[in-house]
Length: 606
Image (cartoon, rainbow, N blue to C red):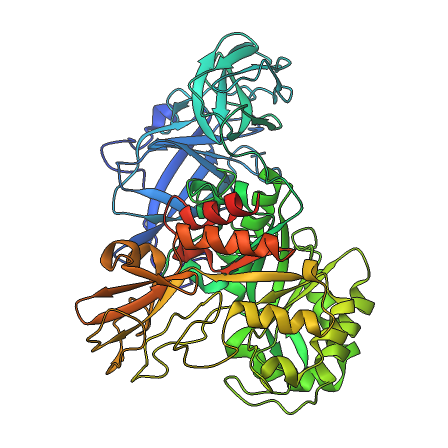
């Protein structure tokens, strides 16, 4: 169950200052400025909904309000509404929105939040004073300081300077925030931050604090990239593309920020966001919650700033926007189709122009028009069989890609993920991939999944062979044959990307270590039998040999094949020698926390 909105009617609310922390106002305090009271309005075990109410108990208007409190370790705000909520460690601060900061005498305003954990707030402050109204100052908060400027940037430090804020009672000091967290409090308008990491992106803002200890709004942000390190954008003209799966934010717990923490974001050029659906001959967003509604806390987000309930865009799309702000070299494409959703392409192919127009409408939605740089079509497979069988005809794919290029024009990327079946009379021969190539920037050639436990009795064989080998179960089922066939159909080498799987395919009941053994079924996998992520296999069943340019592993009675950093290095050398446009992979979450497979692709193509 997702608790993302305000409490429904019917929940009883006991609105009292929290016991032992904020006393009830006595008659002698009735003329004081303001009070802040807290109530827990929902509790679902692993989380809760909280509500704060600020009331002006004075005789003059209150122009702004800031509520501060501490949560015990393990309790946090996950989303909020009607206030801008930030944190520094276990200390939380809520500031009024632009439209609800002014309170006339006797007026009140509430804001709420969803929380994780079970703790209660402590050490409440309202505008720097007591939340019970005993000593709340009535003066206005300071203005925002000027946006900092950065100078003297080194591998580990940066000097910041900003113009002063103003306040009717005087500015006492400034809080310096790095990626949303306070790192220093200074009395001057400059600060040198040290102990940074080389080759890393940071964002700095500044807040003023007045003599009543009220903090004003944050300044504009300045982006800083320290020198040195290994996080400079990729060099050269090779495409280094990874698929990011929409559903990975659930069971896999893989988010856009993981691209940053793994170091992968600095080593890629493109991201395909997978997948949009194809329904009634039109492109459509699939999981709207994951795509643009899921709220991220400050520590989960790329920018270090928490989502609010009323911001126009949240979810993966907003996180991709934040990623592009930090890594402006990255281009993002929206990928439609895939194994599950390819059944919708038959209807789309019947009216390519209408399909293309619907896709452009999705990609240029005003809420996220700046996020996407193009479209990727993953039709599995035109005029052939995948999950379902398509009979659209050999020209359907070419017509569809032509309509997309005509509609999107030259300023968008138009690409497609295509079959790597290099056999005679196979899937490459079923559609006009050569004719369609004039309309695409490149093809993602899916040079993996050739062999696997979908043939439960084997024979065991590498699922991503680079070349043929003695005993290969099917002629033409390898990368070299697929690339050669596409070239023979007129596809330029630079428009072909070699595919890498960040996972293995495996059998159980195997009695021989070498390829070609019999099996009894699929080996156990975390999410699906017969499939396992590289990050698991590298330790659970380490590689014991190589065949056809890829690795295999025999452990117990299980047999797996997968690519390692070493085999990827060999494949990247081959790709460069073939003059290919680069490489792509499926998909980010199969890599290690340190992104070692992405690093191997980057190093191999650089």
